[in-house]
Image (cartoon, rainbow, N blue to C red; front, side):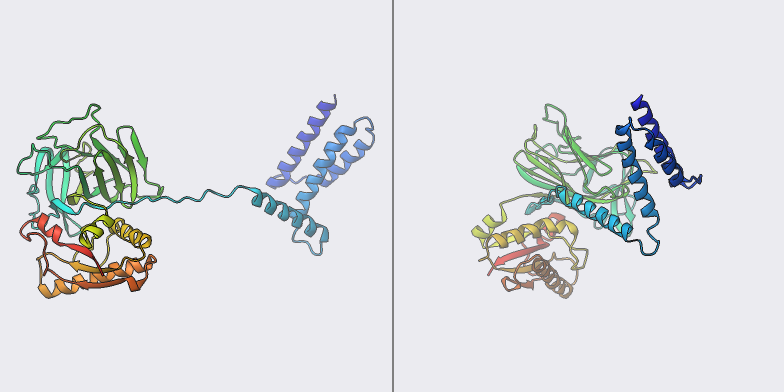
Amino acid sequence: MKKSIFFTVILAFIMLFSFEASSQIKVDVKGKVENEADRRANRATDRTIDAGFDKIEEGIKGIFKKKDKTGAGNDENTGDEGASENMGADTKSSKSADPVLSWNKYDFVPGDKVIFEDNLAGEENGEFPSRWDLVRGNTEIAVVDGENVIMMREGAPSIVPYMKDPQKDYLPDIFTIEFDLYYPGDGNFEVYLYDRKNQKSNSPTGYTYIQVQDDQFSMGQARSSHPDENIAKERWMHIAIAYTEGKLKAYMDETRLLNIPRLDFEPMGLTLYTYHARNDNRYYIKNVRIAQGGVKYYDRFMQEGKIIANGIRFDVNKATLKPESMGVINEIATLMKEHPEVKFSVEGHTDGDGDDAFNQTLSEQRAATVVSTLTKMGIDSGRLTSKGWGESKPIDSNGTPEGKANNRRVEFVKI
């Protein structure tokens, strides 16, 4: 009997509170409470329920006090509210702090010797890209926002680099692959690590490709999404792959998404492929580079007295750093912080294209940009100088795209 009465009282309170809070039905809540108090006075045998009802009554008064907060001179309301705020502060301070994340999400450093480079310079709009071979589908050169791109249109397009000996394994034990991909917002794009026209896969599982879908990379059972939940689906992205004697890392823009300790096959070549290209869903590719890499920066510095960095990239004919340059610059900054005795002359170099005087000025500006960036990262400016050499000190032929890519570099020379 007591339980039945108690639950009836609770139900009555809930209904009264709901009606008052919604402001849809006007109810004399205070009057009902007083009537109920009178009835309770005659229930001497029901003291347990009385105690519970007293708690409910106190809750209602608290609600009224918050509603009447705008009233003048209510010291009692002020005291209650202060107590409530203090309680909230104490509760908040008792919660555990969020874990502090320290995550090196971008450690990509390109290989130091370019073995395949295609920036699509000199290509004719509408023709098949001259440095590639077709496996299937329809692929042509197009111009997007004033730049040449490889347009993958339809027919499940698939292309491979055009090599002199395509059946040969042309990927070394340590290499990097980079390119820019325009993802149209729908479907998958796949990067195979063998030439699907001229080579045979040596993987027992068949997982020889990295799949790109929206903001995600996957390779076999390895899978990861970009941490930025608001990243646009339709956009240009920079894709970078680093392979070192069995270990593979893959990056989307400035974030590492795959970190596989041991592949079950040996990469031999490259195939770019998508089954989802259509005339209303075109994929674009540009700035493809394969490079052989490399000895750690500090070891190079100790052996040769300098570090040659091909991975520091700038906008065309400008001294503006591209975001993918930060992997190299982060490595240099780390080296200098770990070895405070190291001092560098940062020296810019260009390829042989263009005006000599312009290239000289450009190389000086680019070297100065790198010094400025390192200084902002906490490196003492007294440990850095900058200079430019223009096109005067090539280390490779300017007659091939790969040679030009090797000549466009920044060197960190021991002082």
